[in-house]
Image (tube, rainbow, N blue to C red; front, side, top):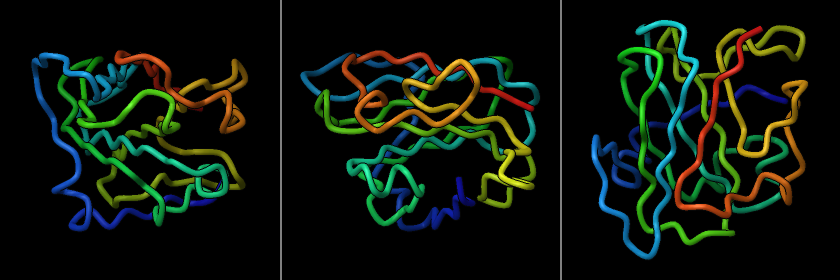
Amino acid sequence: MRLVSLCLAAFLSIGSFYPSVVFAESGILVEISNIRSNKGKIHLLAFARDAHFKTLEIDDVVAYAEAEPQGERTKLFLPELPLGCCALLAFHDENSDEDLNMIAGIPLEGYAFSGMLEDGEQPAFKKAIVSSHQVALPLRYW
């Protein structure tokens, strides 16, 4: 897994944070839990292609949202995403450098993938594709 470098300005118009949501035919509400501090931001990225999900390249991010953590849980909404189109990555950017910091391939900040395996490994794209309008992503910290 490589560093995820975000260009936030390019994505601010793509995703939004809504504290309460009325569901439409499309859109995914993601509850991120197990947040260990109120430092930094929580980032949520949706990938539409296997190759970009594997490498975490932001070139193919189809939706993005962020929020400041306030407690152990937060909700982010990705509007206009049909089910079955993408896989998700959430991470807690505690030091606000807009990267998922890693050392020797191990994340130093909290992260979660849709369909994440018990050992914290990134799942295959097919297994990570979101098929529900509501998704729970508990962050994992090493």
